Length: 146
Image (cartoon, rainbow, N blue to C red; front, side, top):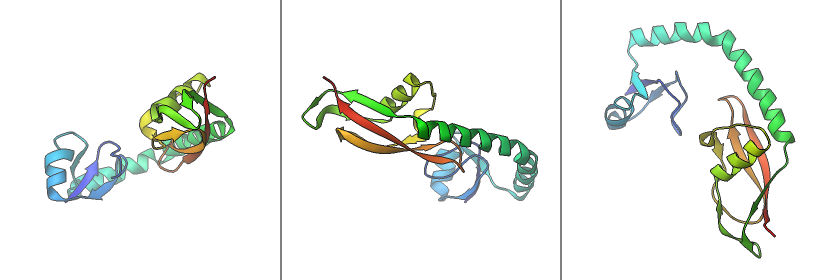
């Protein structure tokens, strides 16, 4: 089944992508939730025209995302957490990384950050997707509270 995505769907595609999925996934989840609609020939023509009109706007958005990526690379993020030796009491997730970024003046939605769950102190790296073409590795360090 071919569908045109209305919104970004994690592990599937971005808005305005034409994707092929199994019938049940499309019919029972993507279409009823409003994430996609059928990719008929007329819908594909309308999509092509809309993408052509959005192309020049997209260039500015990509430039802004690249500037933000450079800003993020320059940041030094240290997250303090309670720990016994090297092992943390609890864990560090995307939410903690977002809070650390907000303290430094950067606002990024947590769904665009992929880091996994960290349970030890040390240096780690998270992947931040600012745009479909701009993905940046964000280094951060976890230190024990004193």
